[in-house]
Image 1: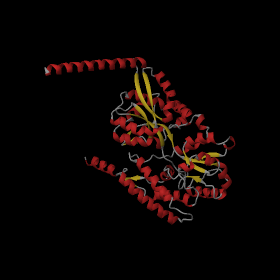
Image 2: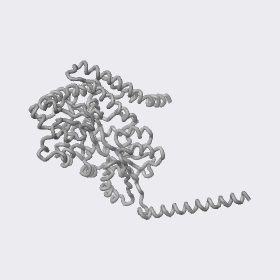
Image 3: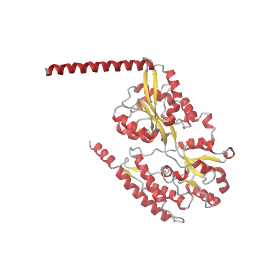
Length: 451
């Protein structure tokens, strides 16, 4: 009797499963009918405002490829990293995605991204070519990890100088920004002297690491050594950059404030509280919107100065990546090719203000004639990538913490020797913190090399 009851329960369970399966098939058929039978859906995850406007570009792609449909999912930047990692672990990644350049090394090291070297090479003879030589070298390099290409730059950014041309000219006799640190320092001191004790020459929020990073990248020594195994912050180059950074606070050229204490840097520049700030391309639109018409001719942009000549900056922005687990990798690459064309990059710039990574696109009159954008073109030729290690964002956080603590130690009229001592102590502490972060990396690389 018990066996009969068991068999009956089993038959009932199978029947229930069958009904559930039929219901699922019916639902799938219904969805297919709603989406259009016979079309392949390419899943594309994009972040923030880019996801809001990319649909306008996708329309042209779908017209050119009527057999394809692109499903764009908007992912908030604050949740993007965790969502992408969760999708990779759960084998539920999209076909392609927008990925911040500093995230590429992490996902490439995990094996989440498909190498694109062969796809780029194959496109060279087509009308949709993606030629590496047309991209800014430092930007292209952000996608090269472990000897392979894992992404194609979609848009770029870097930080440079936004400044009050009139204040600089009044203090120094010229509105042109010097190209070297010593000459720039002299100009900043002149601006401070002219502005008085309640005004400053430059805004450098202490809870941002990007300003010090830009100065450090202008040095020849790398920030990490031995293939990213150890910190290199005690190098002469980084200590020199940190000493220059600390001098700006010691001479009261920069206020000791964090972002929340200067939450509207464009307003501070506009009212002359500071004459310089270091920011990215998004500030162009902010300056045009926030400053009155009478002040629009009073501000400008300029590449960063360097120790002995023009400086550099960090290669930032986002890239397009294809996931190794993509259901439709060929179609995903077709979309990457399409979005990488100069015509689409120009349209993307018009919609978002995001700067294009290809030099050909910069030849367009809309970009070439914009005086505020031109400085970015100059600096993009000299940008450097941050160290291509998955731990970089944690390292950058430690750089911010240690440099803020050092800046709060400096006092007025400190000698170069005193600043150098503080810089050495800070660099030593930073190396210790970074070496601890990189301990697992050293272990992994040692095991790999021992095989």
